[in-house]
Structures are given as structure tokens and as C-alpha cells.
Length: 409
Image 1 (spheres, rainbow, N blue to C red):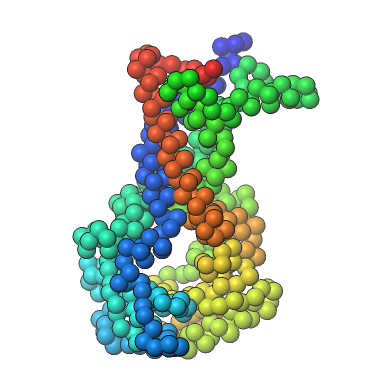
Image 2 (image 1 turned 30 degrees about the horizontal axis):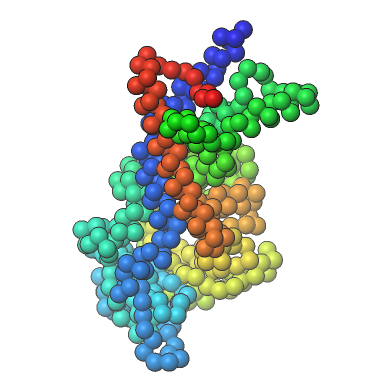
């Protein structure tokens, strides 16, 4: 009976051990880069003040109408597609405008003076060839979600995130006390909880013992956030897996799935930007009245040539974050007819849950305090991955033929 009882545990231990080894490098990269990305905007602005900082021309100076800014940019860059326009300005900060350059090797991110529409600078997002300082944070971002390998890296990281999500449950199960089946009677439950309590403690005595108990205990302390990061990583990078599971379990729907692609991209819709904004504003107000939410400010308007649609985003009472606007509608670029609506909350249970996962992953809730937590968690996750590799190496060195025990004092 004893051998039979321990056989599943040994199998799960091997799965945990070798899954951890397979994904360790990726988790270290994700953990270290995630620590920095928790403060992406602040660090990027500190490294590149010439791009981000703008001095008002005079006290009380008023910024240009955003559509006037776009018209000036279109005149200055007649060959480029300017399909993204921020509608919100912050005192002392440049407008960040994304373009689709006619030459893919050219810059795609513009920093614009909101007072006169002049381009302060530009960069090809994530290209270290333009200078480490200029693109350090964007490059770190590319490392974080795709090892800076483009679509192939993104899919690879999605697979890693899926393995990590599964391993979260395997690792938790391995911390449970050995020797008895799941307790049912109160006395057995108390005894089981008492013996499991040891797994939450870090003990000293030797480097191996300290790292083993850290690996086990820290994994329990932050287990919920480990799963949040892992499963949201699947959502970001491996949607063919994420969406059907979330849809079946919680009724998740992705508004992008309902947006039909045109046979050929349409560069110029019938509605110009000002007209589209007016139509979208009325459509958003109608949605707010129907759904009972409050509009708190505009964020951006975007044109999608591949769909022939405008997307309009606002801050609202449905958003999870004060900083990130996530209430949006899509309208037809020719007729202005309403196409779709989406928000962090108020759409479905699955969408709300997915929004929380993504917001927690990106540090988009809780202000600076939570971003500090995310930064610290990145370091702890790095420590978990490195300690796991060290424990495997020590066991292999001490027991060349393998060692199944995962219990240390």
C-alpha cells in the first residue's frame, strides 16, 4: 500500500521538477523584467526627459485641440498613417502618438508638443540600435512578453505560462503532508493542518535546507499571485487556449472576435476624425445611459484600417484602474453605426474576471503601493526559479541516480 500511495506523488514531483527546469530561464527573465516594468512609464520618462517633458510656452498656456495636433502631424508626415490619437493631455508631458510608417524600419512612436504640434522626438519602439537609453524600457517590455523574438517568442512564452499555471497546482499539492489521505473528520483535519503548517515556514541550518524551505514556503505565500501571473500570461500570449476555457467556465467573450476583417485594408474611411469623434461620443453617452455607468474623461481614438472601424476609449466608472481607460466602443468608419462595446466590468462575469487578471498582472490597480508589490513579487518569483534550479543541481550532485524525496526536516 505504501508504494502505491507514494507513486502519484513521485510522478508529480518529477513533473514539478522538470517543468520547473524547462521554464526556469523564462521565469527569471519574466520576474526580473516585470520588476522594472511595474514602473515602466516613470523609468522611461526619467531616462528620456527630452521625449516626455514639455515646458508650457507661458503661464496658463492652453494645449491645442488634439485633432489640430493630428492635422499638423499629417501635414508634416504625408506618407505615414497616423491612426492613433490621444485625447488626454497631462501638464508638462508630451503627447505619445503611434503611427504606421510606410517603411517598417522607420520610427513608429512620436512624442509631440501638445502646445504647438511639433515633434519632440521619435523612436522605433524597442529597437536598441537607436541607443540603449532611448529604448531600454521598450526593449525590456519586449523581453518580458516574447524574449524580444516577435510572434514566435510570444507563442513560446504563452506555452511557458500554460506550463507554469498547471505547475502552480502541482507544486501546491506537493506541499501537503505525506502519509494520509485527505482528512474528513475534524480531528484528522486539525492534525493535517498542523502538519501542513510546517510547509509555510523557512528553516535554517544549511544552505540547502534554507533554500528548500524558502522554495516551498514562498511558493505558498504568494501562490495566488503566481497563478494570476501565469494564467494572465496565457491570456496575453496564448488566447486559443485562454479564451475557450474562460468562455466555458465563466462566459468570457472577446469583442475583437466579432470584428470582421475587410478583404483589403481601408486607409481612408468616409468619416473624418472629427466627425467620427462626434459620433463615437454620442454612442458612448447612449451606452452610459443604457448600462448605468459614468463617463469620467476621454482617453484616445484609433482608426483600424483592417476593419474599417474607429475605436473610442474613455475613462469610466466601469474601469478597474484610475490611470488606464478600458471602456471602449467601435463604430463603422463609413456610416458611424455602432459595432461593439467593451469594458473592464459590467459585460460578463468572465470578462470582469479576465480584466482583473490582466490588471493585476500589469500593476494597473492599487496605485503606486500595488506596483511596489508587483516589483517585489518579480524578485520573489525570480528567487523561486533560481532556488528550484539550485535544489535540482544539489540533488543530482548528491544522488546521481535520482532522488525522489521532497521533504527536508
